[in-house]
Length: 355
Image (cartoon, rainbow, N blue to C red; front, side, top):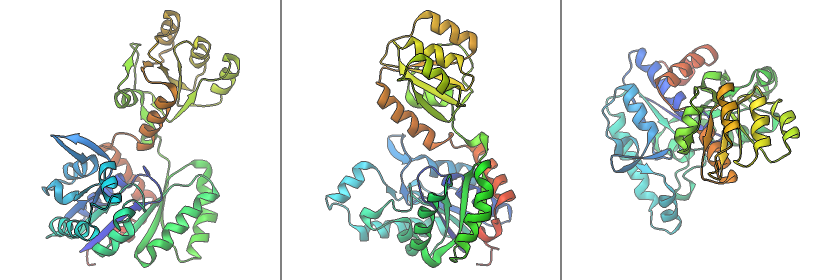
């Protein structure tokens, strides 16, 4: 049996899509597959229980019938972490729980994808970092990393050293067009000289970037004030805290953005509606903008969202939504499978079935 743990240098780097995509590839090669996420970190309430959304998606897309408590033996919530810090969680018991879940999920399977939690270091308070889990389950590891600029290599190098001989390879994900050549011609040779294999460089795919305005509104629980399409994509947020004239110059230099500002800043509202790269206006403080602003937004086709929260907390919540990425679904996994097929060594990741 081949066990592959998918971990990452940071949160929201595409681990879920990559883990499930590799498992589906193994399925198509005639291998029976399993999936588990020992530390559930992407939590939501589900039928009276707090569960991670990723194992639920994996069970649906892979067609497995494993129990959720086997696929996700530890709910790694803030409450759990506090309990661990207070000494009320026994690492040895937790390791046994993970081991039992893995034994159930892997029984009769040829390939098991194990998804890490959050980032490589998540779980350290109970001696269950992803490196610890890999040792516990005797798993090989693929390290998913982002790359925007040369200092990002520090994180990749440190993570690779921590994983040691278990590292099967690094996959750089969401690499921009401007950075792709640099990764290929400079970063990869640098890492490979240090015996750190790079098995994939996945280009940034616009269909997986950001969130739609509809998804943003749903996640924030806000009111939509305009009757216009909400399928535009938001990748970044701008706070309207300058003068209207300065804001317009600033807004015109960006794209696929949402402006977050108070309901009394009509100058910022107007500037945002004049900039072609602004796909959404988020009004904070619960104060509706004037009818003239809403009328212009409707004319321009720009959604206006209203929240009672303040600007800073709205910005923090919105950035969390974007960091989490598009709602994970079958389309996301299909796109990732294509990216892996075209830009990664899938054979090196999932093995030949005789491991």
